[in-house]
Amino acid sequence: MTDRLPHEKGFHISWDQIHRDSRALAWRLDKRGPGPDGGWKAIVAITRGGMAPAMIIARELDIRTVDTISIKSYDNQTQSDTQVLNTPDPDLMGDGTGILVIDDLVDSGKTLEVVRAMYPKAHFATVYAKPKGEPMVDTFITGVSQDTWIFFPWDMALQYVEPYRGT
Image (cartoon, rainbow, N blue to C red; front, top):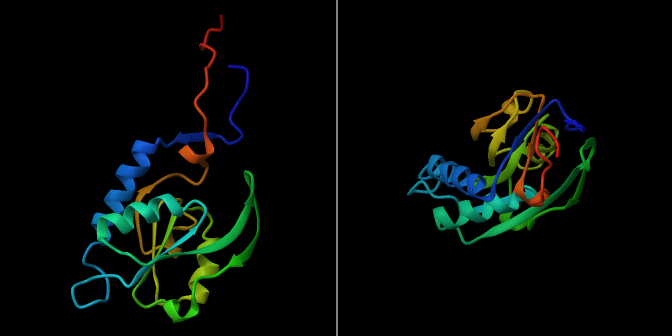
């Protein structure tokens, strides 16, 4: 091989896989909300990674109110200071009771820590979780090691790959 990945381990997620894993997260969250029937009031997706899982979960759980919170914590593949760029409707959010906050991944937990401080009673769910971030999430589907870099389908493009032994 000529080039190594920028991180020690790479975990490639396809569109099919994120769909299956997001549906599994929806099933795990079903009937676990604070509503009388176990329902949730709304979903808030952490942009941008949480948007695709939130859409799938909203469909599976028939949740029609979906909003976003914009947090910037990465510059490409480098983690930086967490910055809140946009917040959901305050009347909807309150203290977070009945709100599902969805993200694709919890890594260090810094992003969820900021959002949890804003909405302490919300339920935080991610599709994937790394050990450092696990304490910040209430529900997740798949754990991965801290040194794994997850390549999501929205960050990738299909292209020809040179055979391992070259041409």
